[in-house]
Image 1 (tube, rainbow, N blue to C red):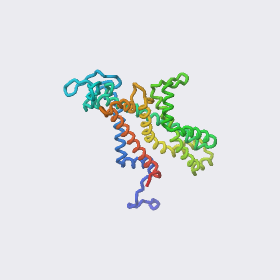
Image 2: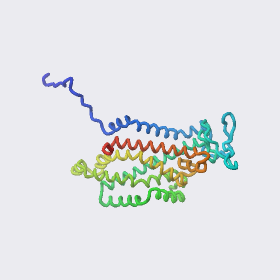
Image 3: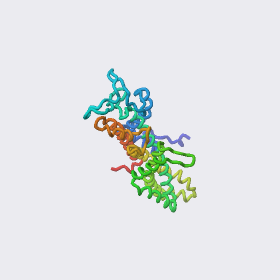
Image 4: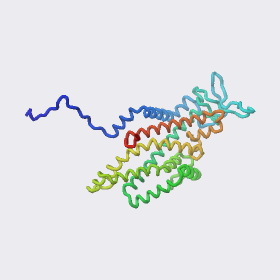
Length: 340
């Protein structure tokens, strides 16, 4: 009986269980310092934007959406006006107070006497919310169109591809500006549902639509190659229904591509939203975004440049962090795309 029992030698090497792609990706990402730094910067920006009401109420002590042209604050033990007499030229007019680096008006005031720091935080909330929501809409629509066109082929592929070609034919910003002008002027009325021109749903919808072809086309190409792969052909040969093949064979293989698109599309959507808001066809007053704050600071570039620089720096840091995360995710989840 004992002879039948085979024992493993003491010096036999121990084999580790093979890990999946997600575990391997996580091990790669947590050792990448630039990725960790980008994630930390992005986390700080998101948490700071979410804390905008707390900052405005308990730190700044002011309403960032209400004009405060006649307001006064305590600065170095003295009560000073928020809008100070101009020292340029003939000394006519007023100039907003500059950065105090204190609790109130940390980054100074804008042309309406509003706290710039509080408005940047509130603007970050809207910019990040619009970018994230538009990314979800874009990826969902692109996945439905790209996977359906690539998997079913035939007339389904022809119809969906022609729709993508029509959207692709328009320059992206020209299409976004055209849709924004029309929808913001008239709003959207679908039966009992009415979306006003000042709703954040309009820029979300516009930005989510215009980038669908840029995601759907790569997905379609990926699905076309997967459709001819051996495991899909074997599943079809066994008579497995098409919906099961989609759920169990196609979707898991395109999931990594969709995940990589999330940070990249968010960064692109932030730039697009800021551009539309800067042109006054994105976020509408009284709401604020980083683009509208840059527009507010146009007339103060020579006297109070921080009004435009603060949201501009926030956009640069956010988009740069998202791009670094996107590149790192791509390299970790699909090493074949990494350049030597």
